[in-house]
Length: 315
Image (cartoon, rainbow, N blue to C red; front, side):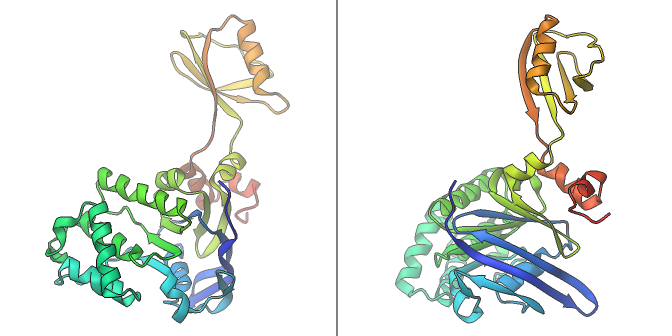
């Protein structure tokens, strides 16, 4: 996927509350049309970062550039949609009236607002909800409503903080498909979560925040390549039996009809295949094992030797 210019540039942001550093010298860029994952454990500083990007908080130091110019909350907020993790809905208000009210706050005329609300309610299977009250909705239904009210005004930058919270698998897939469609149509998504499997499936680029600092920044594909450990899984037609020690690889795991091996430095996958085939093993599968983002996340946050090897966490 080829991205356009940066829609958002964050440079050396700092924010403290009393003596607590919530965000400590964080910088990153987000390309227009991308799906950008902001990851980190609870309390890492993700929400504080998002609130500075949306103008809810002012940074103590650093700069934010939106669409090529210094961020101006009073003007630029109309081009941003923010779906917070906490519910921001009026519990006793009818859903249709609430969506209309929030759309008007974002500058839409009543006619345009009604047209867009009907479009999105139909698209997300919410047409029968108009006269329901928020207090009568399940958590998942509230999430769908919050998603709609976030994107009604067609913002260029859409910020979603834990958007799948409370959604069943069917509705999670519905929202996920809309995220992909919005990005395909040129909208930029910031997706904040601690659910690594969702990020791995959805995001193009990620940053990892821990204790207010950025400890990882890169494309999902490149990050997984950077942290791979030269391990491969080999599947056999039948149990290969005992495979003798050799200079090419070591056995990490041995199942009935498969092994996981680690290739020694200086050797290639081709050398492994030659070695096994020369010993009459019938190979039916051979693929490299890349670490999941969850594994990388745990290594980095816990400050394991692998994290120090990449100079991402100070020893």
